[in-house]
Length: 244
View 1 (tube, rainbow, N blue to C red):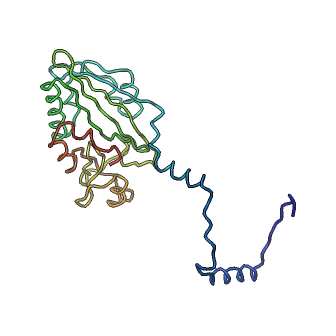
View 2 (view 1 turned 90 degrees about the horizontal axis):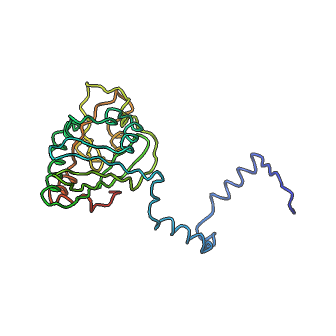
View 3 (view 1 turned 180 degrees about the horizontal axis):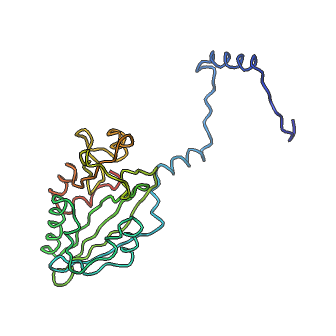
């Protein structure tokens, strides 16, 4: 045929004949041929490869003094807050403590214990946590470092992110209905509770059929798994695989 292209047109009878022939094929009618090694090598490399680090290199920092007042935030913190529809966090007021930004007593108590651990031990603590956007899964590693005069510096580094179809449920711009119970979300692993099970947030949306009804509010807390890890040792969450 050379390099000339050929348009092959089959009529209905020919198509039916081919379908009949294909339906009669058995496993022994085929010869197993190994693909070139370079193909398998490529597949193996893609499976074994480490996740690609985020290109943005996002690192945000802020500091609190001995009385837990937020005394400094870096420029990246302000940019991150604005980009994630949280302008109220972009400009901190020196008369406001860190704990006033927590809506959950449970989460506030845990973070207060972590801060106290850093101050008492005079050593840094690291915690891995999720901080998702509606269209993005994001894993951060937070380092809490003791500062002079009982201050504490918080540094959160984005270590991995991946895109996903947008979840309006996580958007701060979605209208929430008070007619439905709030959905518990873990502040560390970002799993949610649905029908007494802690699931990935996408499964929560599907199980609770959140796309078919007014959006409920979100109640941030901590799931039993993260609570157990946190209770065993303040630094224990840092040892978790970030993809758990």
